[in-house]
Image (tube, rainbow, N blue to C red; front, side, top):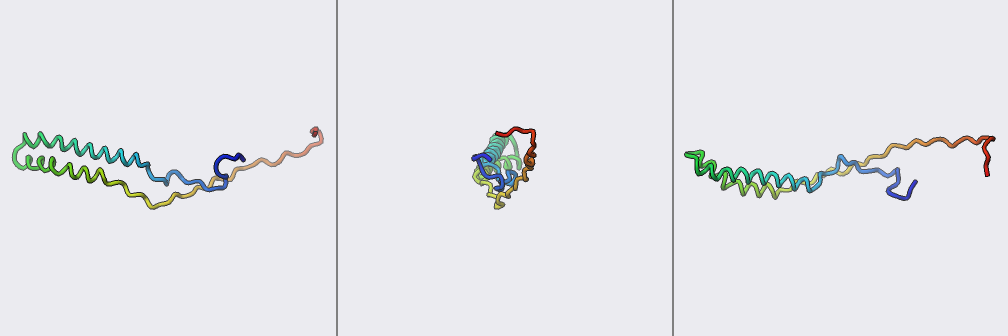
Length: 107
């Protein structure tokens, strides 16, 4: 056994129970924010060229979407409370010692 790393009998944390990286959470929040701001940008000219109740909907979208987008973008994902579950590595099979024979020369 080499001196590197943990002993073979130590449990190893399972990667499947680990939380997703924070960079994934940040990228997801940035995408949602950009989509909502894109919808807001579309609402501005549509509010100018539309008539009646549709104009009111586009104006409300242009006014309310920035607030909603910022609140959603700042809401981070809650950490999961599940701990890492250890995975016990399987036992390694070993070959039995070689039999001692008379025709072998030993020093």
